[in-house]
Length: 353
Image (cartoon, rainbow, N blue to C red; front, side):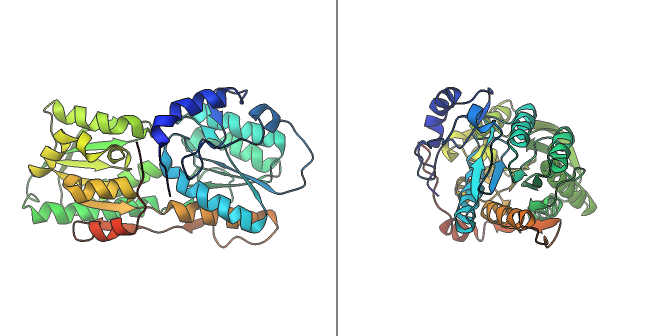
């Protein structure tokens, strides 16, 4: 997927969308897969009007529009929508913001869309509006990040606890290989926020597995990047430069490695000096950074499957057909120093300029 010029245009997109949307902070797709500006079919205000529908409409609501990892889900969701004759819309906060997500779902309820699939920032805060949508007769599912206490039909995405377990097992292997399994290790964590259900499950799986395997971990710091790939790399690099260096770095997502590897010289030096780096995600920039020595092990997600299977199964529900499960597992991809290069060959470069 070509995400060319994604970041150098995103600020311009914010300004353009502000002319079209009535609610600050939310809107439709920012760019198509070729990195070109998408042309919204209607304004946000027009979209919010209740009108008679002729076609099935499903709205996909990511955590944010400025995180390009979600574009894989969008691409596949739109592809499936075209095959099924379904209109797939892409609406989300510009940056991760639960209140904006709630406002977007409220607008979708007013419009009486047929389906909503949402990646939940805060599973507790988003629950009432999900339940409200369900009560209004809208089929609602979650992808990437669940709200398990809500009345959503199903969750489509990674088994996040299993992803954390895989990361914990990878850490045990790395620690033993470096002969550090008999000593207490300082751990630096990066995650998006304190609320996300998916990220907390990954962290819990990682910590519980590592500690059950006899690894002593002392959490010395947690960096919260707010799901923002534009600042995550700087946060990590600046922390390393303080001299408060950990023995282990674990990130529940690939945010810091969206930045070019060359922008993390301090972290790279830390890795060369024996630091252990474990992350979730295996999209192109993360694998590229890992191959250059910035990670020991990776556990990847499949955003393509999230988009594809979310729309396929929500369509089935709208048509009155049975859903196979309340949890649709999109699988894991395991990466280490032995297969980083091979995995990278199967990915498409992100042309971030």
